[in-house]
Structure formats: C-alpha cells, structure tokens
Length: 378
Image (cartoon, rainbow, N blue to C red):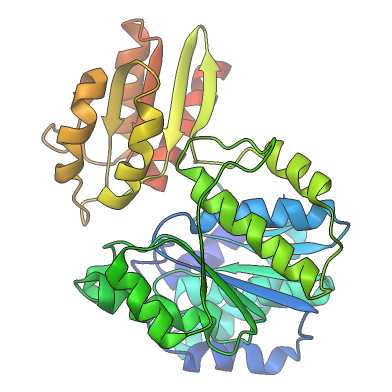
C-alpha cells in the first residue's frame, strides 16, 4: 500500500456514492486556506449515465485545440491518480503525495468525505498547475455535490435515470431537480435529450436550456451507438464555446482527438490468446438498456454481471441473457469480490470462450483488469 493510499484510508471507502455527504460547508472549509486561482474556464458535468465518457471526450477535444485541460472524474479503476488528470495524464505520485499530506489532516478533522477530499485535491492541483480549463464530473446529484461548491461557466447534463434514489429521490422529476443545480451560476448549459418528465423539470429550472439531438457527425466514430448521445453533447458544447470566443474553432482537431480516444472501462476491449475480453462499468438498468443496441451487433460466449451488494441488476438479466450462450448474473453465487471475478473469467477463458463481457460495476472492471494483467504475466 502506498503512503497516499494509507492516508486516504482514513477517509473511508472510495466509492463516491457510499460516502456521499450532501452540502458545501466541508468543501468550503477545505478550500478556504488554499487561496486558489479560478481557471479561465470551468465546466461541470452532471447526469446519471455518460458523465465520464462525456468528460473524457470533451477533455481530449479541448486539449487538441492547444489548451491545458484539468480533468476530475470518479471512480478510479486501479489507482487514485486516475481521478486527477492534466491533458489526460494522471497526477504523478510525488505531487499526489504532497496534496494528500496538505489536505487529509484537515479533511479528517472536519469530517470531509473521500469524494469531497478528492475534489479539493483536484481543484488545488489544477490551480497550482495553471490549467486553462477544468472539467469536473459530479459524483452524486449536483445540488449539494462537492463539485458544485465552486462556480462554473458551463454545465452539461447527460442522460438522467433512476439511480442513487435513497439520496436523490425515487422518480425522474426529483432526480432531475437535483441534477439541474449543476447549471446554477453558469452562462452556458446544454443537455442531451431526456425523458419528458426530466426535460420538463430541467427547463423549469433553466428556461434557456437547449437539448441536443444525438446524430452521427461526419467522420466522427463512437464506441457503441449509445455514445452518439454523449458525443453530440460534446460536439455542440465545443461549438458553443467557440461561438463565445473561449476556444478556437477547430472541428478537424476535435474530431481527430475524439476518434483516437479510448475511455477506460467503457466498452474497453483486451485481447488475450484469441479471446476478446470486453469491460464496461454499466451499473444500472438505464445504462444496460443504452448498451443493448451495440451488444446485439456481436455474438457473446459469456456475459458476466457482477454488481455491488447494495445494487440490483435483476431487471437487466432478461435483456442480456438472450445475447449470449452463458450468463453469470445476480442469481448465481457470484458476489463482487476480486476472487470471484477472477474465477469466472478464468473459467470462461479456460473453456475456450472467444468473446466475454464483464460488466455491472467499475469495481468489476478493476477486478477484470487485474486478472488480465496477472494472466499476461503468468
């Protein structure tokens, strides 16, 4: 265990939604002594699904225009460093250690959560490194999320569905109202097309909100049809920023950067001795439904669904089981542990499966990546 991991363990478990503490008071207490400089441009991304993919696409495109781009996302797959990136490169260990030593003592004293502390570390690092743009992916909700404790210039709203219901509400209207607060104080805002009830709430909160229709932009490629929605949102956001003079108008550079992008844990494919192992962090029914059109374009020997004990993907099983020869799902004795992810993948690999999908959680993706590394080094 690294010294940073040891410090972070004082804050509890890393999953943003397991340590959700609503409110901005702790964030303000963490940030107040830092005397940070606000970047020229700060962008919030909120929603239920697609936040991470949207953030990565936007960061890649903005970097391609010559800007220095800070990107904060969660969760991480293998190391905490992945949450804090500049120009898509994770924060180096020495810089992360310095941030942790400066902030975690105060975070512990005031009872800040893991996610709040990670957000503060990202903001401090971006300020010290003088980025041109900050992209902040919200954790849970937006109204009382750590990422909305600082002002922003643009808000992007990705697809809204039922998730984190114990905190955000049990219908789309309540959840949309929470997410809508990502637009607070912003001068620019865009959303993907939403269900009618969610769209109505978002527009009540911000009458000037525009909804982006997903469409296949010329020569722009996406890993899965569901990503057209996120890519279209990014494409329109880039044009809005260019129209306002915040960035140069360089669609060819944007397109090249987005086409070259591989987003960790989103339809990520690894090949191992003739076997394709696909990984995706889809962890709710809404996300699984979005994946289905792409999944149907391929034949699957096995789909392994490992989700957390506090989640339920039972409704997704009837949608996935017709797509594969074998499905290991919540009805099977496979809790989401590293040993069981290893065991299921090893079993399918040894029986000669040619195409496997492991999904249900980013923890599942992390476990599968670790198994692949061990398998290759064996």
